[in-house]
Image 1 (cartoon, rainbow, N blue to C red):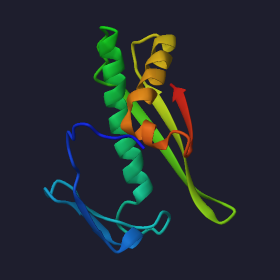
Image 2 (tube, rainbow, N blue to C red; image 1 turned 45 degrees about the horizontal axis):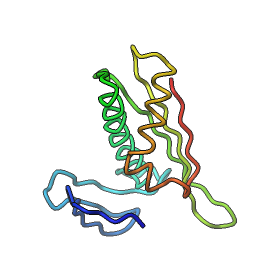
Image 3 (cartoon, rainbow, N blue to C red; image 1 turned 45 degrees about the vertical axis):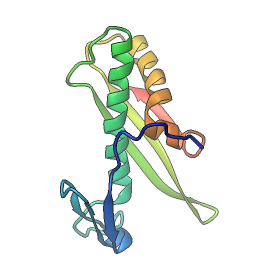
Image 4 (cartoon, rainbow, N blue to C red; image 1 turned 180 degrees about the vertical axis):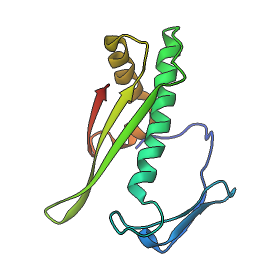
Length: 138
Protein backbone atom coordinates (compact mmCIF):
# COMPACT_ATOMS: atom_id res chain seq x y z
CA UNK A 1 0.00 0.00 0.00
CA UNK A 2 1.24 3.49 -0.84
CA UNK A 3 1.51 5.85 2.10
CA UNK A 4 0.68 9.52 1.60
CA UNK A 5 3.14 11.94 3.18
CA UNK A 6 1.13 15.08 2.44
CA UNK A 7 -2.59 15.19 1.61
CA UNK A 8 -3.20 17.71 -1.18
CA UNK A 9 -6.97 17.34 -1.42
CA UNK A 10 -9.77 15.18 -0.04
CA UNK A 11 -12.90 14.59 -2.11
CA UNK A 12 -15.94 14.15 0.09
CA UNK A 13 -19.12 12.69 -1.35
CA UNK A 14 -22.39 11.26 -0.13
CA UNK A 15 -24.15 8.55 -2.14
CA UNK A 16 -27.50 6.89 -1.54
CA UNK A 17 -29.30 4.14 -3.40
CA UNK A 18 -26.26 2.59 -5.07
CA UNK A 19 -26.41 2.36 -8.87
CA UNK A 20 -29.99 3.61 -8.91
CA UNK A 21 -29.54 6.44 -6.44
CA UNK A 22 -27.78 9.78 -6.32
CA UNK A 23 -24.42 11.19 -5.35
CA UNK A 24 -23.23 14.64 -4.39
CA UNK A 25 -20.04 16.29 -3.27
CA UNK A 26 -19.77 18.12 0.04
CA UNK A 27 -19.06 21.41 -1.76
CA UNK A 28 -22.13 21.09 -4.02
CA UNK A 29 -20.06 21.12 -7.24
CA UNK A 30 -21.21 17.59 -8.10
CA UNK A 31 -24.82 16.46 -7.81
CA UNK A 32 -25.74 13.51 -10.03
CA UNK A 33 -28.48 10.99 -10.44
CA UNK A 34 -27.17 7.46 -10.86
CA UNK A 35 -28.54 4.68 -13.01
CA UNK A 36 -27.40 1.22 -13.99
CA UNK A 37 -25.71 0.89 -17.39
CA UNK A 38 -28.29 0.21 -20.10
CA UNK A 39 -31.26 0.97 -17.86
CA UNK A 40 -32.35 3.98 -19.99
CA UNK A 41 -33.16 5.81 -16.76
CA UNK A 42 -31.92 9.35 -16.19
CA UNK A 43 -28.47 9.61 -14.69
CA UNK A 44 -24.93 8.46 -15.15
CA UNK A 45 -23.25 5.33 -13.88
CA UNK A 46 -20.09 4.66 -11.86
CA UNK A 47 -18.21 3.44 -14.94
CA UNK A 48 -18.79 6.76 -16.72
CA UNK A 49 -17.72 8.72 -13.66
CA UNK A 50 -14.57 6.60 -13.36
CA UNK A 51 -13.80 7.09 -17.08
CA UNK A 52 -14.16 10.88 -16.83
CA UNK A 53 -12.06 11.05 -13.66
CA UNK A 54 -9.29 8.91 -15.10
CA UNK A 55 -9.29 10.83 -18.39
CA UNK A 56 -8.99 14.19 -16.65
CA UNK A 57 -6.25 12.96 -14.34
CA UNK A 58 -4.37 11.33 -17.23
CA UNK A 59 -4.36 14.55 -19.24
CA UNK A 60 -2.83 16.26 -16.22
CA UNK A 61 -0.15 13.57 -16.01
CA UNK A 62 0.53 13.97 -19.76
CA UNK A 63 1.01 17.69 -19.15
CA UNK A 64 3.53 17.03 -16.39
CA UNK A 65 5.42 14.56 -18.59
CA UNK A 66 5.51 17.13 -21.41
CA UNK A 67 6.61 19.91 -19.05
CA UNK A 68 9.51 17.74 -17.83
CA UNK A 69 10.69 17.71 -21.46
CA UNK A 70 10.13 21.47 -21.87
CA UNK A 71 7.23 20.81 -24.23
CA UNK A 72 3.83 22.45 -24.05
CA UNK A 73 0.92 20.04 -24.24
CA UNK A 74 -1.55 21.38 -26.84
CA UNK A 75 -4.78 22.79 -25.40
CA UNK A 76 -6.78 20.36 -27.55
CA UNK A 77 -5.10 17.24 -26.15
CA UNK A 78 -7.82 14.77 -25.22
CA UNK A 79 -8.36 11.31 -23.81
CA UNK A 80 -11.35 9.20 -24.82
CA UNK A 81 -11.74 6.55 -22.15
CA UNK A 82 -13.69 3.34 -22.56
CA UNK A 83 -14.39 1.41 -19.37
CA UNK A 84 -15.97 -2.01 -19.69
CA UNK A 85 -17.94 -3.62 -16.88
CA UNK A 86 -17.96 -7.38 -17.32
CA UNK A 87 -18.26 -10.77 -15.71
CA UNK A 88 -15.72 -13.56 -15.43
CA UNK A 89 -16.89 -16.63 -13.52
CA UNK A 90 -19.74 -14.52 -12.05
CA UNK A 91 -17.28 -11.95 -10.64
CA UNK A 92 -17.63 -8.34 -11.79
CA UNK A 93 -14.53 -6.79 -13.32
CA UNK A 94 -13.45 -3.68 -15.17
CA UNK A 95 -11.33 -3.28 -18.29
CA UNK A 96 -10.23 0.02 -19.84
CA UNK A 97 -8.89 1.60 -22.99
CA UNK A 98 -7.51 5.12 -23.02
CA UNK A 99 -7.40 6.60 -26.51
CA UNK A 100 -4.99 9.54 -26.40
CA UNK A 101 -5.16 12.44 -28.89
CA UNK A 102 -2.29 14.95 -28.85
CA UNK A 103 -2.42 16.89 -32.12
CA UNK A 104 0.75 18.48 -33.39
CA UNK A 105 3.23 16.22 -31.60
CA UNK A 106 5.19 13.35 -33.11
CA UNK A 107 3.56 9.95 -32.49
CA UNK A 108 6.71 8.45 -30.93
CA UNK A 109 6.92 11.40 -28.54
CA UNK A 110 3.25 11.04 -27.58
CA UNK A 111 3.77 7.32 -26.96
CA UNK A 112 6.67 8.16 -24.64
CA UNK A 113 4.55 10.76 -22.83
CA UNK A 114 1.76 8.19 -22.41
CA UNK A 115 4.19 5.69 -20.86
CA UNK A 116 5.47 8.35 -18.45
CA UNK A 117 1.97 9.57 -17.60
CA UNK A 118 0.86 6.00 -16.86
CA UNK A 119 3.63 5.81 -14.23
CA UNK A 120 2.55 9.02 -12.46
CA UNK A 121 -1.25 9.29 -12.88
CA UNK A 122 -2.87 8.27 -9.57
CA UNK A 123 -5.70 6.44 -11.39
CA UNK A 124 -3.16 4.48 -13.44
CA UNK A 125 -1.20 3.64 -10.32
CA UNK A 126 -4.37 2.52 -8.51
CA UNK A 127 -5.48 0.24 -11.34
CA UNK A 128 -2.05 -1.16 -12.32
CA UNK A 129 -2.10 -4.91 -11.98
CA UNK A 130 -5.79 -4.90 -11.08
CA UNK A 131 -7.51 -4.43 -14.44
CA UNK A 132 -6.56 -4.81 -18.09
CA UNK A 133 -5.62 -1.42 -19.54
CA UNK A 134 -4.73 -0.55 -23.12
CA UNK A 135 -3.43 2.75 -24.43
CA UNK A 136 -3.95 3.85 -28.03
CA UNK A 137 -2.33 6.95 -29.50
CA UNK A 138 -4.72 8.32 -32.07
